[in-house]
Structures are given as C-alpha cells and as structure tokens.
Length: 530
Image (cartoon, rainbow, N blue to C red; front, side, top):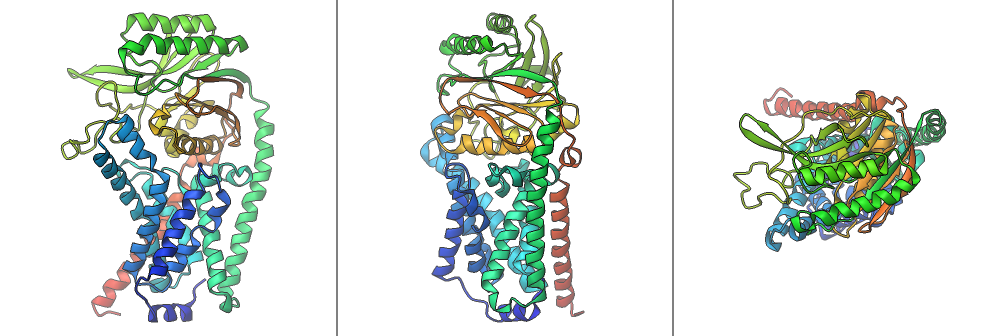
C-alpha cells in the first residue's frame, strides 16, 4: 500500500493553504454534523472525510494540522452546541462565560482532528503510507485517547453514527464502537484514494486495499446478520422480568426548589401507580428523581417506601447521598434499590463524574465557573462497580454521563450483572439533539455486552433496548410518560465484555510505533548518521 513514486511527487509540490482547502475542510465538518441524531443521515459518514483528505493532499504538515482544526471546530461546534444551553440556561453562567466554556471545549476537541490530519499526511510524506493504510489506525487511536485524556470526553465517536444500522454494529461485541469507526474511516480513505489515484489504479497496493476493505466490510455484515439471529435465539432461553420505566419530566428550574418537593414525589407516585396496573416487578425512576437526601429525610423516605409497597414492585431510583468520613462530609450522586417490604437492598454511587457539572477540576484556576449543577455540594466519586442485587435479578446501574464510557459499563456485566439500568437527567440539554445523541451511545452498551438495558430519563429519552441494540420502545422528550416492557435476564458472553478496548489499544500501539519509528529516523538524520 506504499506509493514511493507518488510520495516523491507529493513531497515536491507542497502548497500553502488556499481558500479552496479551507472550503473543503469546512465541508467535512458540516457533513460530519449531519450523520448524528438531529439529522440522522448516517450514510453520509462513509464519505464525509473525503473533502478533508483532498484539502490536506500535498500540504505542509502544519497546514494539514490547521485544516484539521477547521474541520474539527465546525464539526464539534455543530455537535455539542447544546453545551451553551446547559451552562447558561440551567447552569446560570452569563452568556459571555457560556460562550467561553463552549469555545474552550470545541477547541480542545478540534485538536484531535487537527492531529489526525497532521499524522495522516506525515504517514504518507515520511513513511510512504497512503490514507487507506494509515487513516483508520490513526483515527481510532485518537478516539481512544479522547476517551480517557483529562478524564475523557468520548461523546459521539464516529461509529455511534451507525446506531440504527443493526447488521453492521453487531461487530462491536468484539471491537467496541471503535471497530465501526475504523470501518467508516477505511471506506472514506479508500474512496478518496480511488478518486484521487484513479490514473494509478494498476498499483498492486491499490487492489489490495480494495480487496481488504471489501472483505472487512462484507465480513462485518455477515457476522452481524448471523449474530442478530443468534443473540435473539439465545436470549429467548433467559428468564423474563417486567419493568416499568418512569419519566417524570420535572422542570429543571423547579427540581431543587423545596416548595416543589411534594409535587415531584406526587408525579412519580401517580405515574408509578398507573404503570403498576401492568404488574411490573421492578419500577425505575431517573437520576436524582428524589431531590432530597433519601438517607435522612424521614417524611419523604417513608413516602418512597410506601410507593414501592403500593405498586408491589421493587423500586430503583436516583437520589443524592452523603457519607461522613474523617470528620468531613462527602456527597454522592447515587441510585438506591428498595423492596416492597420497606428495606434498602443496595446503593450505587456514581464513579465517573461530570467535570464542571459535578465537580470542578483545577478549581483554584476555574473559580469563576464554580459548579454548574444545583442541589448539594461538589460530588465525590464512588468506588465500586458491583451490580445491585434483589431476588429477581442483578442490575448494573450506570448514571447519566457514565453511559458514554464503554469500558466502565462492561465491568458491571463482567462482575455478574444480568441486565443494565441507565438513570439520567437530560433536562440540562434542553430541546436539542443531545438527548437523542446520548441515547445513540447507550444502544452500543447493550450490543457490546449482550444484555437488555432499561433507561429512565427525567425528561427523555426513556427506553428499553435489546442486546442487539434495537430500541424496543422509547418516549418523547419533555413529556410525562412511562414504559412498561419485558426484559430478559442474562448476558450472552462477548469478547468485548471480557477484554474491553483491546482493538483500540492495538490501533494505538501500531500508531505509536510508527510515530516512534519516524522520530528515531529524524534524530539519526539530524545527527548525520543517515
């Protein structure tokens, strides 16, 4: 897949950035926006990067980085624009600071696509690798780094755009979402090379690339078609449980106001009693459904127990919690499981907190931001990823932001969870595409670990998801609603559950080895040894 003659030609005609190149970079950014919820034009993902590839062809390395930054800025601005709404309308920051927070995040995320463009061109100029060889490895490596750098923000990795394409995404039970991202970038790079290098199509490497891409894509679809049937058939042998998912639609501006506390509980009680007519075994309320300390608020604690008793179902709900430790109070974003007989069966404390939302990293430097969420003080992270347990099942509970971290969620299943529950409050996003973006990522957690997921969201989207990623039922946003559905209790063992992000790590190791190789060659050249 190396083109030495072509490489020399490209290296000899490096050009400065022109308005055409900037236009191409902007086009890729705009196309990437359309592939995610809000537009759901996922087919565009398969050629969205081609304009950027054209823009960086023959450019100096630093110019490639700038063009990648432009693509990234346009893309991420269109993807996470809702951050402005979250921090201004609900976080009470003034508009100027809200624009600053959004811009800072978008600029940070843009660095990854800038680095991608830089490394892709470097791989060709310095190592002789065409886009089809290097781009998929580099893209996946950077997506993986984005998942943990500075606590991580892997929001809408490229592969998530295909969440409705069920036959394709089944391979994520081996590779995670990164395998889908790899395929998308591979196809983009191949189509670019086909269009750009058509005159040199007799190159041996060209035909190898076409064959490799076709085999990989077809194999993924064949595996997906088989796995869809296999998973559905095997899941039929699992015991069933009826669950009720309650969506209270509590206005964020009223949620923590003590004057509305009784009204909030009444809403959840009424919806739960209505759902109880279908005799669910487990009733699920969203993140922070009880806007008080369930541990110590005697009046409302009794009310919650009574609701569980009246509905004759176990109740799983979100509530703030606290613990005294070393003379200091620690606060947690938690989920409690209670029984109809009035006992607390277990509690999960959220492990991966939202920066600036649940705590302020580098607080002494970002003092002007404070903390954007209302309620109690800054949260502390939980320490356990053990499933909760009651007589009917072992739910693995992950709260809100944790849904976008696949390696975290899989640990619940690896430790014995036979279904997953996602509690969230997406009211912060307002009436934007963000709640749907969030749901698109949750579907992959079901596929990766081959378990059912019940999702309760304060303002939507609440849903029940099959182990194939199929969304069985879902609510609208900003409506009072409930879903009663049947899930199956069990997990079909998957490679991803067992080994996690192994595929992404392999891509990262290969990419780093190429970078190290080039650095060592450069050092030797400068020292006069080459």
